[in-house]
Length: 387
Figure 1 (tube, rainbow, N blue to C red):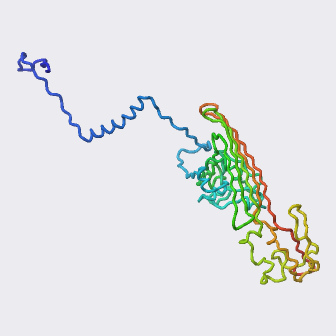
Figure 2: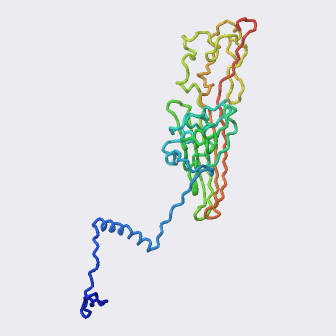
Figure 3: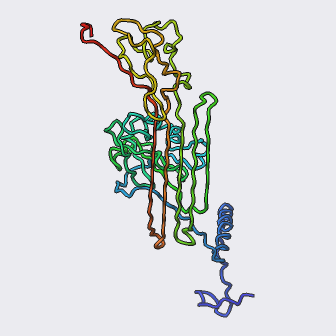
C-alpha cells in the first residue's frame, strides 16, 4: 500500500487529511513501433553474443596489382575483363596469343608461325581494338615488359606476349578501354596485365599433344614444369619457377591441299601447256646448268636441270621435262617449324607486415625455320628491244 502523500496543504485544504498523489502519465505505443523494436532486438542479439565471446572476424588480405601513377580524383572506373587460370584451361589455350584470340576486343595479330621475314621472327603480338601492337601495352604484375629484340617491320617496337610461360600465369586482366592518359601512347588501345602465381608450393607437370586428321605433317607439342617451396605465411618467403617447352612441326605445301592452286599442277593440260617454268613462271630463257633442288640436311644443291633444258632460248617454249614440282615435293613450307623455350622465376621475401622484397627473371629462346623453295634464276637478253 502506497504511503499517504504528505506535502504542503493547498489553499482551503484540511492539513490533517492525507492527500492521494495523482496517477502517473500513460503513453500509448503503436504496434508498428513494437514490431520494429522487436526486429532490431533480434538482429542485435547474435552480434552481442558474438562480441561477448570475443570472436572477431578477420578480413582476408586483398592484393591490388597495378601501377602507382598519379591521377585525378574525378576519373571513373574503366572496363576490365579478368581471365582466370581455369578460364584459360577451359579455352584449351596454350599460349597468351590463343587466350587473346578468344576475347571480343582482340583483333588478329602477328603469329609466330607467320612472322618469317617480318624482322620479328618467332614473336607474337597483342592487338586490342585493331590499333596494332604499338598501341597495346603489356604488363607483368603491373610492371612494363621489355620490348622484343627485333622490331616488327624493322621499325615498330612491341612486346612478345608468348615470352611468359603459360604455366606461371594465375590470371590476366585486360583493360579494354584506352589508357593513354595514364600510361602513354602505347596504351591507346588498352592494357594487358599478366598476373603470375604467388606463394606456389609443390610441383606441377603438364603435357599436351595436338595432331590433325587433315594435315599429316602437322604436330604441336607442349610441356611445362612448375615447382616451388616456402610459404609466405609460415616461412615468410616463397621461391618458384616455371619452364615451358613448345614444339611445332613444319607444314610443307604438299600437305596443305586447300592452299595449293590447281593451275600449278604439272599434269593440268589447260594451263599454258609447255609454256611454264618452275611454279607458274613466265616462259623465257633459262640459264643452262641451273640447280633446281637442294638437300635440306646439308643445305647444298644436289640436282641440276633436267636433260633438254640446256638449249632453251628466248621465245622458245619449255618442255615438261624442265618443270620442277615445288608444290608436290615438299620443298616449300606453308607453316614454319618452331622451337620455343621460356622460363620464369620468382622469389618473394616478407620483411615486415606490409613490406616485401621480390626478384623476377625471365628467359626466352626461339628457333623458327621454314623452307622457302629453291632459288631460281630468270634470264633476259639486252638485245631484245621489248625488255
